[in-house]
Length: 309
Image (cartoon, rainbow, N blue to C red; front, side):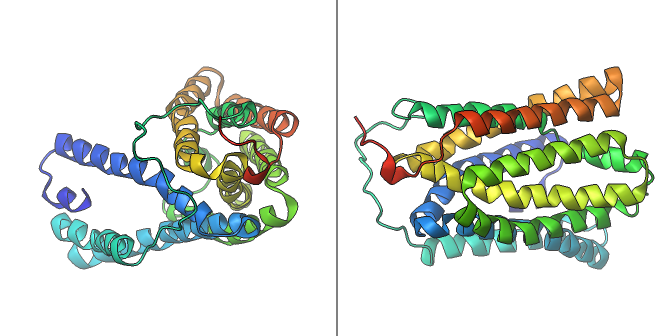
């Protein structure tokens, strides 16, 4: 879909292309995560997902810099810019076709109908999904953080540098956080990350200068490093190998279905009671989700689970 942006002539076409692009992301994400879990040993699972997230965030650092260079070279020739930008995606498809190999962890029953259902998953995994959805409801769009940064004295010219530094913090902490989850436990790291998230959002409620904004954005990057890889590794730990694809689909559903309501809730409270109250409410929800995860979700691995019935 990406090369088609070069030929879009109106916003409706751009919207359709972007929707198609997001459908592709939805289709690929769950099987990709399942392949990562299948291709590494249990004791390296957190490191593998942490490395994946670090590479993804590295692209978020380098990509805008390349975009800036392309805009500088080709001015307003966006057709050429979008065509060039599609080259890495095309190369990635070639790598997926000719280089990637599936690990023969389990043979799927191809006669069974495709379905996305919670049947067959235990209550522990279902509680994890519910608590994850609650936490995501506290995690609104980062656009609110940028708006808060602007209110606190960070100039618009500096915002891209702030955002790049934030992603650099994600890269470094993802590499370390994934490995840490293998050694200290997934749940412990996720709870710590969610508590750190709550503290950062509480900080944004009272921030009033540029220096504090920079500090909070860098610490916010550490939250991602602690949590993203550990969450994905925990999903693989909590289900049987033959359930991983569906489990990651449900994980992304629980995460994605609350993204829009989270931003809507943040905006409503922001307009009603002000940004400080909005950030405090998000912080309280995040901390509550951390406590619920600590109490109600048991840390287990798939070889401890009962066989499917």
